[in-house]
Length: 369
Image (cartoon, rainbow, N blue to C red):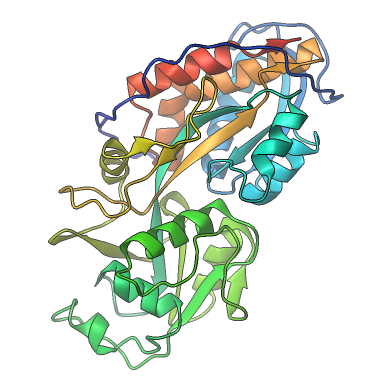
């Protein structure tokens, strides 16, 4: 287990929202057994979910902790990527899904999720806050500093050599080779890509001309499927550069990004500071807690290239045991114990108490109906 020292940063919570939780039908044959709460030991059955590959290390810790407290339960989590996770939740293949992007109606997904949940808003709570690292493979270069515009110009193909003047000017004293830069992107519909392109679009000083999206907008180039595929592709070629959840950077070089007048490496503390200056999104509701992350903050110590990863579920399920399993597992994720387990295993920033309390109220009300 990876041990990471985490300092709880103060993050402003959502205003207390009235929980008008009404019926939301769903059928599933993924669970069976008796009802019971998290830690009661009385739950049983199999709970299936999936989605965000960035959540994978945290999900491993959550599954271990929850199954230890509920020996009759098996939780399956398939890190297929956020887009596939949302699709499988909407189709009812999954009882819950992890997504590194808040669900919206750009592709009609929010409408479909409401239909899947009987017409009501889905449950959408933040469970995992983590920095996204810009990772690179350049032997002999152990430290690298870049601003958002330079990162954008690398990934849009304008900067093609590692000793380009735009890179050299930010890295005095670093011996940069005349090596061709090979950008690597995710091949799947990815919340990490969505967050990365949000950052490039907002902070790149006009260098990134594509709309933020979970699907990489530039045709061709080297790609990897999922977080593990991305990391493997960057490791596999000299001169490569990519982006991945910092917890899974795998010993590769990590870029320090310019924030204001300083360059900050990715950290849980920096991610929490970035979230602290961010606001709830317009789609927030009694059961949905999305954030609009401030990608252009100049707050000292902040690291704005972050993902706020969410769990999606329904307010009610037609199968009582499925409801109990979803309620129990998501309650464990947002509990103090679950957040600390994720912090230790994945280096994430634990939810501030105000956010955790609101999330606990929302998932604690999941029921059969």
